[in-house]
Structure formats: structure tokens, C-alpha cells
Image 1 (cartoon, chains in turn blue, brown):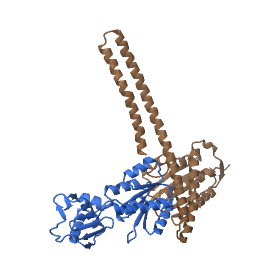
Image 2: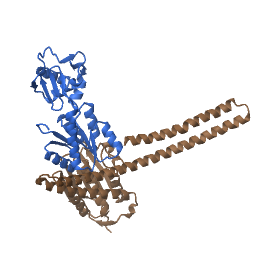
Image 3: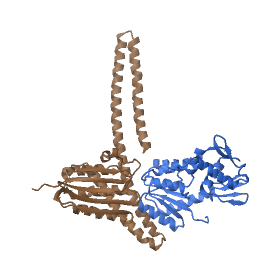
Image 4: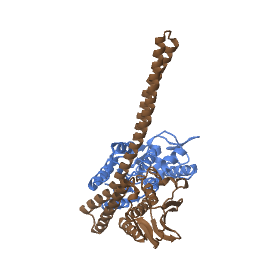
Length: 227
Length: 296
């Protein structure tokens, strides 16, 4: 599907299930990350930028549902498959309403889980369109940016920041909103961190970083991307 | 679970309102009838209406209280069932996952791990089923204990060996240190279940790099059995409450919230006591003190 292996994050407190799933995803050629607690899962879901998350609900610490809503409230659209022993319709609806893409109950059929996971990844490549702002082209799926025809190398944060602004061209975002959406869970830096990231981004995509054409400062508010 | 709680509360509110509104209306009608009534017939009618209203209020309140209690019990029972189901489904899922992994064309090097996992999961399932059975009998009379008078070392060692079969040695650093020879009046099965319950609890509430230690020592007229873990610890204000039925350290966690309550019952049935000592971030130690049997 893509050149580099896709990353799946398995958040599951039962060690046997965690290892069994990891074994199978690795065998399918995925890069596998695992988390045994809610805190670890929350951290990896935000920091490791997985392509897919297999999520248990009942975990030590923050629950799977808390992780899911933290992700969705910060515009992290990574596909999430809930894998839970809670099998009532109410629980399924709750999970799907919070933004899960799929829900399987334990005990599950391994071939079905793998097929659903792959289907979710396929769907994702159709779902997120490439964004274009002036000469800047952003591919949210491949996580690439080109300026004209030249590829631009961005760090993961810079990319997320650009993508956030590009999804709502013209809309100003406050520094706090940017921190919340881009840095997400457990960030302990300051507004200066955002300013530095903006500076770095301007260096890379603006013809004249001192007089930017795309990423503009909105006085007393924050930043916006000029369409 | 919240949805169900809300809908039950909603039903109670609806019934209360459904009863109170007509009652208030008819009381008003009654008072108005008395106030503006000129004949004695109006007066009698007014009093009758008020009596009727008062009766209805009483009935309504009684029904609400009764319904509320039944709703609470029904909720506890359904929570218990849901939690038991959860405890059984997880090992079952592990067994199926590893069996289906074996069916697929996975590398031969993983085969042994799959088989080991399946065996371990069946021991878990067995332990979970035993736990559920203990819960069911816990409400029964504890005079049914089958007491023998001997040192507890053998039972503790048996519990430890059973626990060892449930865990992956790479996952848990499990130490056993039994230094007890004093005779204690105890029921083998009950004590086994107490210790396994505490060990399973320690396992469930400990994150990565689990360290669990089972120890026993003689102290003048008591035998002290401790189960120690390196989990997140239990806040001090919960130290008493964790032994109450349906209390759980954290609502989102698995388990029925019954394990410790039953352990508490069982220990008391042995004329012993159980306490917890815990440091946040470092771990918890459950200590059971059982009286040494006096010489005859």
C-alpha cells in the first residue's frame, strides 16, 4: 500500500491479548507499538502518530473511551478499532459516537479483526483529500508537503501545525488552541513553543519568512493560514 | 452503564411527577371547594378530595422508595453479571486468538508461545470461575467452614504454585517467602481462595514490571500473611472502603468490586483481620492476621 510499514498501536491491558495481536500484526508487516495502561496508551496515541489504533476500553488509568475522546477533541483522526468485552448495543453506540471507526467484541475472530483493520486503513487513504493552499500541497495520509513541485521536509509537529491551519484556511487559531490540538496530551511547554514552531515553518515554506504570504500573525489572537 | 443509571433515575422522577402533579391539583381543587363552598356538601367533598390526595401522596412516596431500592439492587446485579462476563471473556478471547494464530501460517518460532498462552489462559479461566463460585457462596453461613488446625504454609504454597501457572514468568517477578510453623485454625479452600484473590488483585492492579510477593511469618500469638505489590497504591481515604462490597478503587476498572469484600468476610470468619498499607506510586501491602490456635 505504502512504501514504509504502517504503524499499529495496540492499547490493551491483558498481556496475552496484547502479545498475540502484536505477533499477528508484525507478521502482516506492520510496525507494532503496544501500551498496557491508559496513561501509556494516551501518550503513545499522541506522540507516536500511529496509522491505526486497536483500543481496549477497560484499562488501568484513563479508559479507552477517554483516550478516544481526547484524540477526537484534538482533531486526531487516526482510525480506531475498539476491542472490548463490553458487548451491549449501548456500549457499541457509545464507542462509535465518541468517534471509533469500528467495534469488535471479545472473544473475536482473528481473521475478521485483521481484515477490518486493513479495510480501515484502505478507507482512510480515500477519505482524507489532499489540501492545496497557493503553491503549498499537503497530503494528510502520506504526511508529505510540497511547495510547487519541491518536497518540503517538516518535523511531525510542524506538519501537524500546518495541517491544523490548512484544514480551516483563514480561521485564526489562538496559541492555546494550537497547543491543545497539536501538542495534545500532557504538554508542559509555553506559548513560545508555538511561536518557535511557526518560525521554523515559515523558514521552510515562505519565500520571504520576514514578510510571510501564507502563515500570518493575527494580532492579539494567534495565527492563521491565508488562503 | 451511565445510560442505564440515568434511565432508571428518569423512571423514578417520571413516576414521582406523575403522582405529585395530579395530587397537588386535586388538593387545590379540594381547598378551593372548601374555601368557596357554601353548603356543607362542598365542605365534605373538599375534605374527601384532600384525604384522597394525602393517600395518593403516601402511596406515591412509598412506591418511589421501593422502586428506587429495587432499581439499585437490579443495577448492582446487572453490574455484577456484566463484570463476571467481562472476567470470563478476556481469557476466552486470549485462547481463541492464540488458537487462530496457530491455525494461520505464523512463524514456527511463535508456536510455543501460543501454546503456552493458551494453557495459561485456561488456568485463569478456572481461577475466575472459582472466584465466581466463591462470590455465590459468600452470602451463605460461614459456620460451614471446614476447619482444621495446622500450619498454613502448605495452603499458601499451593496458592502460590497455582498463581505461578496463571502468569508468565517474564511478566511478573513473583517471590514467595513462607516462614511459618504455628498452627492456625483454618479452612483449606477458603484460605486458598483468600490468597488467590489477593494475588489476582495484585496482578490486575499492577502495571508493567510487576513485582508481587507472598510472605508469611509467625508473630507471638498471630500468623501474619502479606501480599505485596508494586502497583500505583491506594489513597489513604479508601483504605477502609475497599473492603466494602461493590467498592472499586476506580470505576472504570474491571472486576466486580466484590473480591476484597469477600476476602474480608472470609478472614473474619477465621477470627482474623485484614488491613492494607499503601504508599502512592510505590505499592500496596495487604496483611492478614490469623490467631494462632491455642494448645488444647
